[in-house]
Picture (cartoon, rainbow, N blue to C red):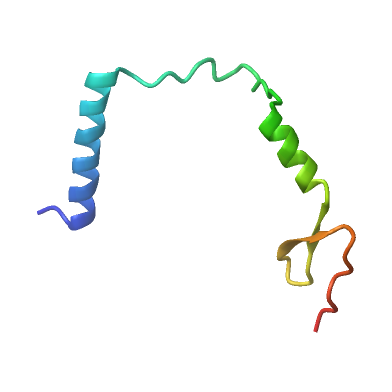
Length: 76
């Protein structure tokens, strides 16, 4: 007897098999070739906005960002 999780996986696998028949196999490209990183206007704008932040790590290892022009609050 199948559990709910097994039934879900079974239905999911059947659905993906149907998608493959309709749309064809996924195009994965050459897995050994390096990723080509292209800069566009959106990415340039994002990088400019992120350049105003600095990443910090607290004493417990949590990461957070602060604006470079602000002083961080004192840790308690």
